[in-house]
Length: 159
Image (cartoon, rainbow, N blue to C red; front, side, top):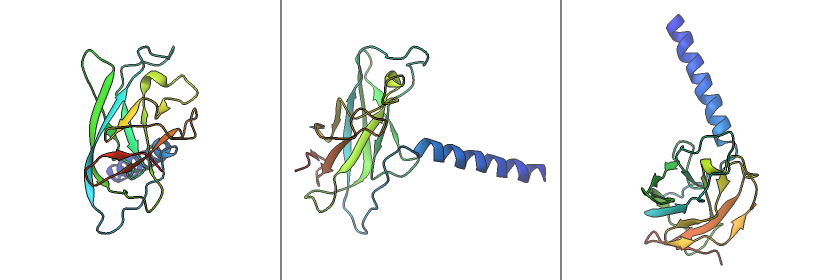
């Protein structure tokens, strides 16, 4: 009985934690049946200094895309000796040429936790080789960059 109660308690905590963690994440875009999937390179340049006074700045940078479901976030790897973080998003549905809205992409940067964005940013982000220059809700905790992805995994600016 105690084992069953412990499992239920852990499940409740995991569900509550997931709900809190994903509350401000972009809403996943449904993947159409038969969609073409590609891998996309992600690069993020972290600011030189940490803006936090009370929070540690040693945590990893995390990438989110609106095609992702909770738990599919990507932890980017740091390039030693620089402020560059990189990773590869796999299984990205192609959405170029545009037939719908562009994807929303962003990172969580622990260097920016004590800023108005709460650590969320799309600034200094490169997706599929494309520097993001169009943003949704800039300067907020929901800041996101807008991007389309082609059959080669190359990022395309919204029209």
